[in-house]
Image (tube, rainbow, N blue to C red; front, side, top):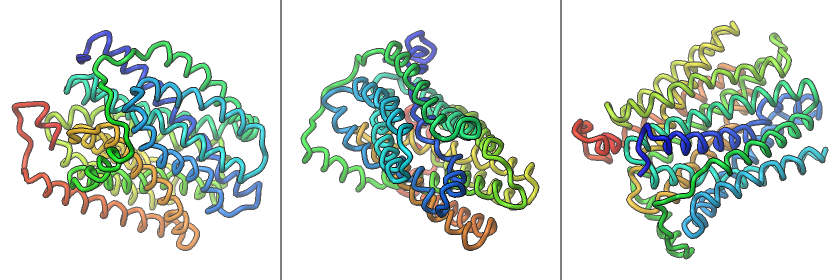
Length: 406
């Protein structure tokens, strides 16, 4: 097994983190562009949201098929095929002006991204020791947030400089260079065992995971947490480009730097779970995020930024713990279990956008806060149900493996 602190750990963790960085750069490149499409193309904010929702839905629905395929072909080949599709689709996207064709290519991009997202944590769970896995998941989620920040900020700035097509082309070139590096660095697996790839077997595996409360509840927590978090930033972009602020897209995209708070808390989550347990951490992260939502009620931009920082830190903390929980609690079919978590996660992100944007259109920012807090209370209810489903009151301190399961 790959042990924490070894040279092989550092090499593998970096390759996985950088691959994750590229994935999320591409996934969220269009998020700061939504107000641009809504303004320049004369389409509604809800319709513009399809540029983000199509990619996240494509990702969600591709995860389980990729995970099933990885049981036969291995995790590494799937991750590399997924990554190499990114620059190819990006170049096609840059060559069209049709809104709905762009949406279709964004859905295809999401499906391509799913190959890496579906199996990276399963790769870590199979190759890393328990302690190394706990820390590596935190680093991996941190790379998610860094990729999301970079893709969004770069998307906004390059759109102001070169238009949206220039932004897409620039990301395609970056992806090409980055994928070549990951291909060189990511080592082959030593502990992968080929599994059964029959559709019937995996259908039973999916149903088994969904019938296991300690797994399915964590999946729902991840989905609703993401619906709240990612779409709050989308609606904040609409708020800041509208009167009385009327900020340029390049400046509005800088609010995504608030994701850095999530980068920090994701790394801290690995230490937290070893000491206090995951379930308590999910509740704590959700409460923190809800406090941040309330702070954004202030009309001063400085306080809006503070609120977004707090939301980001809390939501990423919850996500890191829920994500690691599912992979660790799945006794078999780990790739399918983590893929199912991400199906819930990205489906929540896709549908949550329409929910919060509708609140914005009808009830302004106050309505968004109420809608977002209602999602936060739903997460807390699910965390309580997860706590009850474990039948345990506190994590045992004698074993890191036991602590990971609380």
